[in-house]
Length: 89
View 1 (tube, rainbow, N blue to C red):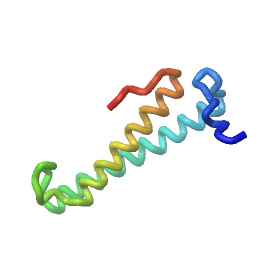
View 2: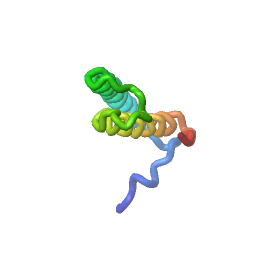
View 3: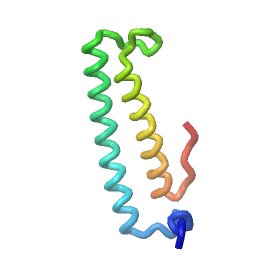
View 4: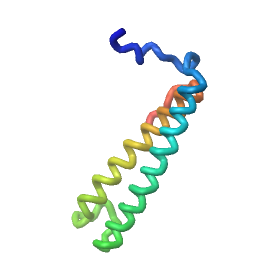
């Protein structure tokens, strides 16, 4: 039964799984909102908002990467629920 999760297809996703995925999407969306607030706070704290500026805060830069990764995950989960393939970012 190794890697049984790989056999799951969008058509075989049950209503319960869809509800779990929807709950996960909601949780991840809240995480994106919190990360956005943290990024804005760090930019305001340092007074640097330009990503090209060498003084741009490392924390804000890493939070942006994390936020983007979560957004990609959300898009993949939404595509799974809708039965489509995710769009490339």
